[in-house]
Image (cartoon, rainbow, N blue to C red; front, top):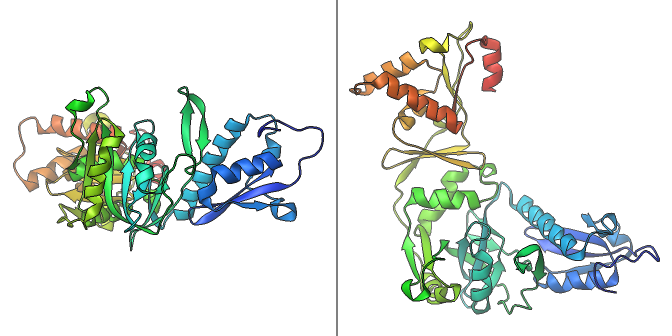
Length: 398
């Protein structure tokens, strides 16, 4: 009987498979014999261990609760759940990226290939993987101290005729290289020139500006805010590895000599072009005056700063804030206003503080109002409700 064909003639035996998922295990159970073999084959790089009897009684994902779900749908659910478990296992400990990771099979030097879903990551893994050690195409886990990579060599998820559910294909079937003990040497962002003719695009690596790299890379991280000083840790790691490389290409096969060159030698660390904000500079505004908030129409409603998880100041004065999984870059008046809002201030108070810092241009009150409105829109500050009293303002701040 093919995997996924419900067998209602008798109760399913308690068969399961234990998989290694990052730093922990995941058990999928309620399988028949064919399904158990299918999981073991497709997840061959994740140390599959068949389980029977009592050892299979309490799986993390139970096929018996989804007897009518088509096999490919169930298998896609397994990938999602196993990947979530992988991320949980590294939360607060590792830098984790939604990225492929490949390594030189001889040296263990690894390159991380980050990209948004559907923009070429899996294709690059398929094309480059036979020449390198395949570590993952989904979740790259990097130790923040020694940069060692914990492999998660799951099956590759391939669209069938451009439609879901995806088919899960063993890295063995695709001929990808076996994993090796690996240490991260390079971080890259894939940038495929889809509309250009192949002969018009020279595959190459380009060093990226830190701010631009963070805008592209942070959305492809997992649980960065759960890592102590996550943004600072990420920036230090990127500097240690020579910055982020943009890999420009038309076809993934063209990237092999580029990747070879990146992995051939230790990267030269770059001098930091940023400074970490301290605890006081990322904390929410402290203290609220007693009494009701003033009428906003008069320009005297207090403005409060929300708390950020982490932040840095770039050499050009811009601030980069991590708030949850959201990366926010403040420019213009934004950095000065953020730093002035260590305590709640009204617009006139902010204008007075800015005036003390130096000359202000004509139309400063209007520009200040526009800047505050922009910060409110970004969710980094908020203004008291003119009708609220101090107690409700305190609730809002919390």
